Image (cartoon, rainbow over the protein chains, first blue to last red):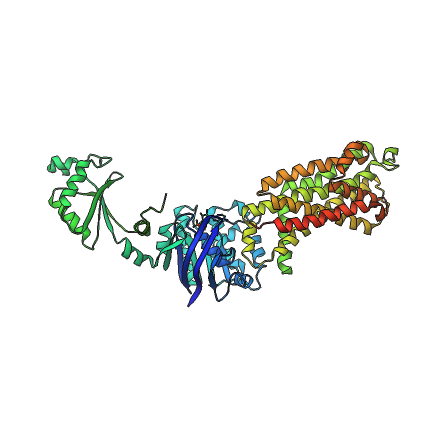
Length: 328
Length: 248
Ligand SMILES: Nc1ncnc2c1ncn2[C@@H]1O[C@H](COP(=O)(O)OP(=O)(O)O)[C@@H](O)[C@H]1O
Ligand SMILES: [Mg+2]
């Protein structure tokens, strides 16, 4: 069942077109991701869905309600964590929950939310004294107070350290496991990949892809990379390899990359050989890619060291779709 | 919705009490002024004040001072910084009505202003034999009109100021001339005639004149101009801030 339907949404701020003809549906119970670089129009899109902004054109239906005319009823049914919003510095954690609970006719007990989000011992703390992760946990708790059917989380983990981010991902999964639909807005491709059932990739106000992260990667970025270093001394005296404890050379010399390229010439699984950040990077495809690469290199007397492989990510999908990198 | 308004008011009051500056300027500062001048001059009737004592003329004037700090500083700074931080945005994403938020602000700052004023009256009465020649009802009416009028002015400041900092600057730039020229701090009788003429454009001058007049039992009919200016400020402030105020 669709809980959100967006059709031909268009929104401009003066000359700036923020959302340019966006359409999609969100199904009940899924974690739906909206990803894209900063300024892509993600926040504008969800704020039109939440009834906080009004689109110039297009229709939005959320739980059968029109955010434009039935905003009051809609706000009872949804929970939001806004990208740019805060609480007063000197409000205490419990006071914020108690206050926000008074806005809804029907709420869950906020004391339980405090426990669930590990804020119980911060109950009496001022908002300003909370860490970034604690603030975000409080915002999720506030978004869940009215036991909403849909929860919107906009840039939930921006500014958090990797550990806090991972903890937050678990919380988001728990929210979904309680039967809620989650709309997750993020500019972290990795976050979308780990968390979302489906993602809409947005760029410059348009949806450029919409599918499960897996399908997107398979379809658009189905690439594997082998990354390794080569001790240069190995080329001149292969026998001394075993004894060599010389540190890896900072950047592979063009000669090294050429040797690797020659060795791998004609291997069908390999598409490209290059050097990057002190390592040799071999791009390719196929389940037997690694075996083919290592076998050929070995036969040519090149012994890769510190070998690791990388699968394609949503970042690669974005690059494939736009020709630009996500982060710049 | 009553419950939301009540909780909003309680929180707003707590937040106010947790900011030392607000409490200082609203409660402590006027009281310190009163006690300082009370200790120096006492409350003996003097001819300069038309046969009244220093405390007698100071208390209604300092009430104007309390009204001005709430209206021109507390309200604009609190509303503008709540907007700047995104507090108002977050509220807007809930079913709470903007009117409830507004009513909580006005209610809490009204109570705070009334308490600050009452404290002045109490201290004046207990320690300096403060004289009161008016009616309580008229005094409450005059206080309410002056307060709401200055609050409306404060909401204009809150509407045009983009941040709490800007609101502080505009608030101070309005507050200081008003409290010095209106008779709220320096007795009106000591302000030069030429300056008095200029000061008549300040709404607070009319507030102080009304409060002082009714304190000594003068009739409303003697203060029609004051009432008209205050009412005009109130209506103008409501209309302008209703049109300009933004929640984000
Ligand atoms: N209130 C606003 N006024 C003017 N321009 C805005 C406003 N909000 C967003 N924009 C512009 O609209 C575009 C999309 O912004 P936004 O929806 O916030 O993107 P995202 O959330 O993907 O970073 C950007 O170019 C941004 O500068
Ligand atoms: Mg955004």
